[in-house]
Image 1 (tube, rainbow, N blue to C red):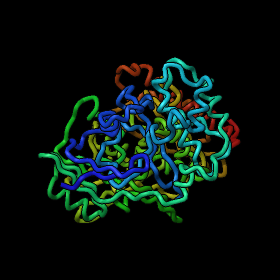
Image 2 (cartoon, helix red, strand yellow):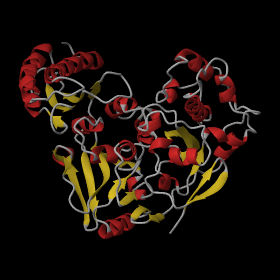
Image 3 (cartoon, rainbow, N blue to C red):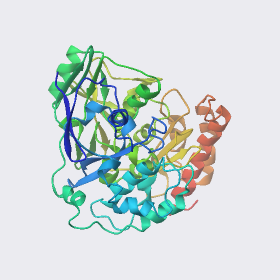
Image 4 (tube, rainbow, N blue to C red):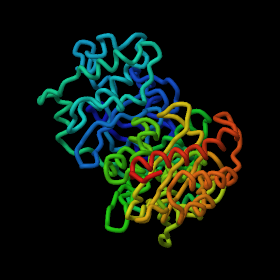
Length: 467
């Protein structure tokens, strides 16, 4: 049996004899490193945060804060982890820990997670000031956020001789191959596409895992177990982002935080989505391929990809094919993937739409599951009429879906309030949403129309089109 080996707080560790479903948080606490805390076991609170040493979009080494409760232990093979114990000691506090002692901690349960997120931001390459969004995945129930914010803003720049800063001058580790076995359970991490297909041929019922932000929740809260898990993190074709004159192609296993860096200032519609897609702790692990593969009708990315006219590149041992995103979702939690097929990448055609918006209706503005999500992509002719429009929603049907009748009602019409009001009457009859704990059918139906109206008012301001 191949053991799991990784670097923990600067020291090499070897792990074997643990179930592959064991998450890092559980293993840490069982090993005596109890600084990381469990608050929710689903990535909502950040009390379990640890930092991975990873490359950023520019290839620079950085610390990335992630939820250790969602990080299955085999995923760490050949990786490097820093926990709160590796940041500082009681007799020698790290600057972020010292800052938190100045009123930023009361009961202290959430404090280790805040320290790790502060730590990752403190050492962020090229940092100027402090991005408070780095703390968006950490919850505090007693201190209050103002003193924590003050602690963040009080931080200066790292000492040039700081060993933790100097570590970032060296390359980040690359995930290596792994075949880990315990009894009847196996965890594979192939490093080639052919290797992936070989594993799937041997184990056709295997479950694929990338960031684990969905699957690990099932393991933690529903106690789901799978005989074979196959990680796609180390497959080069799934980890690339390629730009050319005709398309942007995003690998299925690229973390959302890297996509966020890559598209900044280049693709506003996708750029609007990502800050609303969970917290940075989750975006540092979650992937576009995983969000599509779950086929959830309330997934955040499908409405945007539908509005952008994206295609899903599907691969198997026999070849590849492109599936229009409109045809990818075939039913509730069902996709067009056939036996042995995997999502390789997502292709977004260029030129990108002139005007685009994404809206998410949820109980919280950020880091929440949407009740309704809407994405809009609009192109206008020189005379101000609609030459092309794509309108897509999540949370209103069994699958993410386009409002094709409403689109047809708008094409060729002037982009003005009268046309939008007429199209809204069509839109009001196009979907029949259901009621659930997040919202009633009536509420969802009202939101579908209101989001189109909101898009009209926002877009007329942005494009300076007379209403």
